[in-house]
Length: 462
Length: 81
Image (cartoon, rainbow over all chains, first blue to last red; front, top):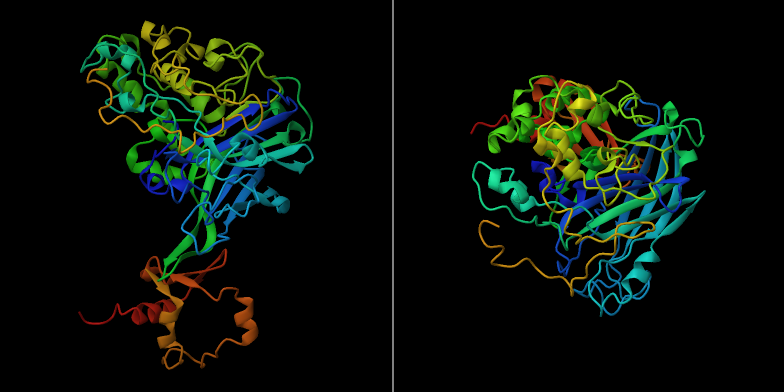
């Protein structure tokens, strides 16, 4: 998946497990950029009585590089504080929660948003309330209205939301992690079975999102609003992170932390740590900074999955199997951005510093007719120019890894026919919904309405 | 290894031959300034003689072989098993 449970340590620490990052020019407010970062994967909506919440002991960060050196220039920090108004009750809520400050809500979370620019720290908002999880129609009636009331105005054109959402990512995990099988093409797999439709393994699961909308003028190094996509200041690089304090102590009644916060999870480009970094180094990668990612560049230049595809799908990827060079296309997509001259009228490079960042060219307006396959389908407003909530990054990255993007840097290479066709089959399912306005990820499924996975699952071979 | 500060009370009397002066107790003002009053110490590698002191959101790394020795002995590492 994008980065759900992608590393040994983060898989054991869900509240600090950064699962997806979205960065895009806001379609309904094109003078702003929306950044969304998700945590706490695979939320079964019925997972009470202690429903999901951000960690009071975690510091969440959105980091922005606006001058191409891979080093963070602007940080938005989010820290949470949870209270228990009725300490005598075991209940998450003691009655219907009809407003954010309802006395019936027994586990409210408040948070502070801080902007950091160099040594300057500015509190943008404090005591901001998160909505409760979507429990059910008795506990959280009118959930959309309740959640929408948790969209807070930070002033200066900025808005923020932090709370539970429907996970907008879609992918066939059950098949992909079964030896990289893609159900629509599994008849061609080394261990073959009949081709079948994809299954979205994230369907109906919730996640916790931090979403912030920021005027473009606040993100550029010179305060301008770029209109020329080829101008250097039109591109920003973004990554999200979660930090924990260095020291943690468990005593008889509580646990507490001491010391400075240190990064335990990070994420920018989807699937970077998940697919490109070997399992023995995933925790190290999570704790390292993007500016040092040249250390991981060989893993991008010679990706393990690109070597496996011809083995797992015999005779399907002969050209990929014969390609022996470094993958300059992937190095650009993942680590530097795509330079001018590769895609006409487009670039999203941040220079030569190799850093895993989600790069967005802010001078490219939102697409009026978006294509979920983004740039490889001619939609420059989509992934990997940033990432919109509905972009099918799994298909795009699978096709890139399969060699579809090699001709961008090596015109003599002819991609295998399959490279332009492969998909996990979830794009066609249309079983994920989104909002057309901030925070764009849809309201979460309620616990009452959720349907657990079938015990019997799908018939074997499907 | 991490050692809670309370473990250091066994060496706070200043009786160590290597300690030139008695260690004074913290003043009330100092205790008040310490916030929660909690401090964590961590010796990552005793051979380096470094001790990491975590308090609030700060970390101070002190290089002091004698202090590390005191901490390690207070933790019982020198006892015969």
